Length: 257
Length: 286
Image (cartoon, rainbow over all chains, first blue to last red; front, side):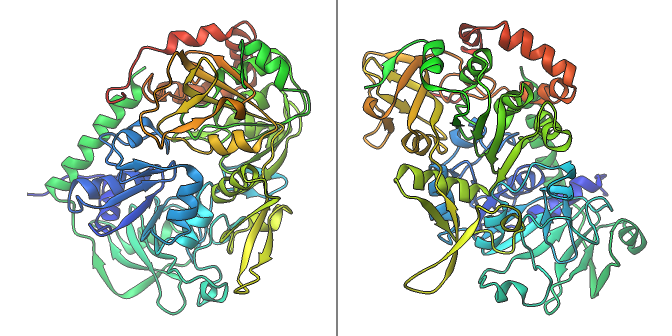
């Protein structure tokens, strides 16, 4: 029996699969938040989810619209102040995985959520970095999830809000960073991982029904494919139903006056 | 000792034109009623400080009350842009806005340093990030023990900080519950402070000896404004109006609809209007 699913559903489920029960995960809002909670409600029930508003070990029944919805505090093991969150828990090295989204990404998984155009005279002023600059450097590793299209996957970033692998190679290590940085980028068409040596994002898995040409057409740089490229397993019935249920509960909750 | 007074008196006494002002609350307990009173009293040339400007500063920027803003994430959470902020930065409407942009970690550290009466904060931050290239207030300091180079930012010392909290007692001691953000640090870092509260009670009865309590002698003014954090929320009193946050996108996208909204709901409004938002208790709140 084959299940119908959308590319966005495939992205969220592929992102959720990257997480394990042992992860202590710093969760970004939006697509990362959906993926982290699908993981918690399927194969990783004991995962620790942390949001930068200070909520530790939170188990939201509906996805939060903001990073500090009451739902996160109501269902958390505990809630700490924001300085404590960033100083003790993030900078303290307690977080295994940071899960980020972004407006734009380059081939070395650097992210821009600050400006398009010149910083002082921006064409588009985006919200900015928030927690991302230090999430990117202080978490053990980073997963990124965003839809693959030419607007987001660009050849050159106007602004590096949070550093991925910088100029590639050992750039992170040269700046004194001991954490791994981005280890996986999960899109709606495929999954990238950085090449072990150059750190350039390389396609390692393609979602069912997607062609290499489609991936190339939607990416702003010439795409590299790994020697062996896997096909991402299709979503299971259980994964799809958990995702659709939480999305339905969330929609209902956010539309309530 | 904090003075318990009306919102109009508190803003009149504590907020002056040209002040640096921090109105904090990390998604939760954002002091909207106080923001509206500042607009009604027509304070100008303010330097706004807030980690997440949120709709409260979108409103102050849109009416032209601000000369500048220090912040770390300027969006409408989960919805998109703050259109009045964008219009000010991209098109200088209604006036240019000087921005000093940081990361959350740096802002949180800077508030804490301010509360601790230190001149600067340090953190392992901004590594490889371009903000350090465009913000001259992001510098570095070398650890005298290990030689590690760390980021340094000036501490935040606002002229006045304003927060919203659940309760105060009749002496003006304040209790904060739920997501407590940087509110305690913001108040202790400031020269003057205002706390608006959902309720004023005979006995504060902190739920735990570790509860977040601001003693009355650390606060300038306490004001009873039920619903004063709407459309954000007050844990135990009313939930966040995500529907309003979504609706704001359309209101603020257009200069005229924004100005009409400000006239109807702010200039022609009063602090008591916020009380109608109380009563919708969140399902699991105490």
